[in-house]
Amino acid sequence: MSEETKEPESSKPEEQLTDPRTPVRLGYAGASQLEAGESSAKLQIFVNTERPPVRAEGTVKQPLLVREALSAMYEVVSSDFRYVPKDRTAYLAYQRLKKQTAGQSAWQAQQAYFDWLARNDPSAWVVLDPVVTVHPDKLLFEVFSKDEGAYAQMAIDWSAIDRSGELQHGTTNVDYSKALFDGVQRIRSYRETKLSIGVDAVSVASDATRPPVIEKSIQLPDSWLRGFLQVQAAATLPTTAVRIAAIDLYNVLRHLRLNADKKQGGRGVRVELVPGEPPRLVLEPWELVLATSAGPFTGRQPALVRIWGRRRLSLLRRLLPFVETVDIHLLGSGLPSFYVLRAGPVTFTLGLSGFTSANWSQAVGFDQLLPRDRGEEAAAVLSAVLKKLGEVWVASADELAKSTKKPIADVRAALQKACQHGQVMYDLSEDRYRYRPLLGGAIDLSRLVYRNAREKVAHDLVAKGAVKIASENRIYGVGLELTGKVTVTADRRDYRPQLTLDDDGRVRGAECTCAFYRKHKLKEGPCAHLIALRIAQAQEEERRRQARGSERGTITLETRTYARRLPVAAGATGESEEIVQLSLDRQRLRIRWGPRGAAKLRVQSFVFGSVAEARAAFFERVDDLEARGFLDGSAG
Image 1 (tube, rainbow, N blue to C red):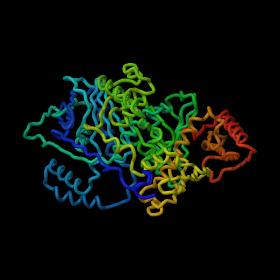
Image 2 (tube, rainbow, N blue to C red):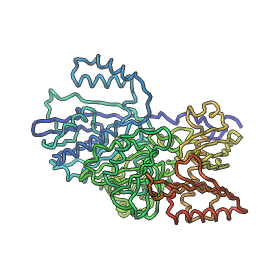
Image 3 (cartoon, rainbow, N blue to C red):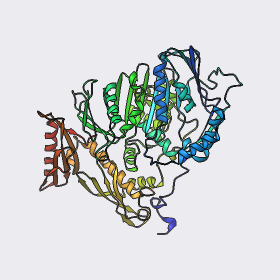
Image 4 (spheres, one colour):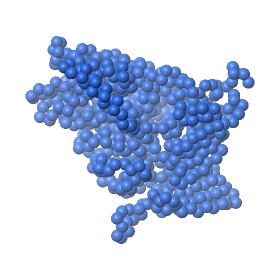
């Protein structure tokens, strides 16, 4: 076959689809600041002049609460929990800049710092200024962290502000610099605090002292923009809701602050949910069990979910003294989680990606939960929903289905797609959708569907049925070993990708027989065949999850891990936990059991005369374990 007639799935998968950046222009009539006097203070927040104007003014009734909420929001947008080795380069550059700016005014020094960043650290500009939305019922702020791992939404009910003047509804960006953060720290309860958001922020400064216009032209990496949209869209997926008290979250943060992470053992938080019992938070690797105090779990099904990236919860520490309740929304082990903190008229929602630094395997698996384009009919529903939501600003899915006369399932799918497109935001605290265009202009969605050309090729291969899972082998303490077979017609050959996934869904080993892998290994990212195998495995896992309990007669490969907390024996110093792992592999059934953390579990293997007999024995033990109070840790 000639080069010109080769099929698309073989075409240079190592190249990018497009320029991986989205240009965004920001302009402000001045620098946001706090003007503080003896008896009053005015918080002036300038909005982006490149977008339609919005306006809100009033006196803050609870200034300390607003101060701590704004501070928590700033910590999120400036956070970066990625591992960085020690390097003195930045410190030496700071010393040189400090000498250069000696004797300059604060404004001149700030501009010099911005100029230096533009020359030496362009990545510092990739963070989008906070997105502010003025709605009839609330004032909302949204931010996304620099490490692409944390999303925050702060909502202030208008009952917390004694408004003056008319609201001007809409969405824009606001200038929230380090200088404004420092000014926010000067808010006090004994001083009347006025909030002013607008193009000119009703500045109290004279024209002679007002800072010059601020203009920024940033290049948002598509990975950052894609993460912002996906983490927010994940909130629309079905979740397991858990309520805990603020003191419970404080106890978690206190232990993490006083104890360094160990190199050996897990670094997650296990959430154990048993209907009728208070949720339990287990901190690894210390196996510290914290029983929550907000009441029993009200769900119908027991569950065990693991959360990673727990250090990011420290972003909430300043707001905790004002918090009344904390609602945790869990998608499943290794998937995004959301924390809704309610503090009177202020609601703070923190969304965390599955891991601090999401690897490609975990990200590809999560993509399978989000919808993709479904044709012209779905586009028509999306258009109708957006039109109605643009008129009313905020509504529930049921309200939109009734007003647009569309099926509720189609409306929910359209709303989730709108969140992925950056046109709508989901208010998890109220289960309502809000009209909020993220950027002033249209987003090039074709650049956000796939991370790179190899991922597009991988999806094409899966769609054509060219990817088969040849074998699965579950090894305790190691994970799942996958071997695939990828048939590429254009290359006239089969490729043999192999993956080893740990129990958290992360890749521990990967290799392939293709030329791309032999040349680059994993230095340039995985090849299309490895991604295709991971997609196929994620689809198969989702199919098995949906089939649980309803299609037992079709399952031939299945692994489940159950756990049960044992009562404390007399004279013992702490609780212990028993683990049982069941693995069905066609006619074989393997059972492993023992205490959690043991280097080696006891093993028992059975071989049956038929797949049906092995399947029956597998589910007989499943039913027995669930009847004895074991939690299915693999169901999350």
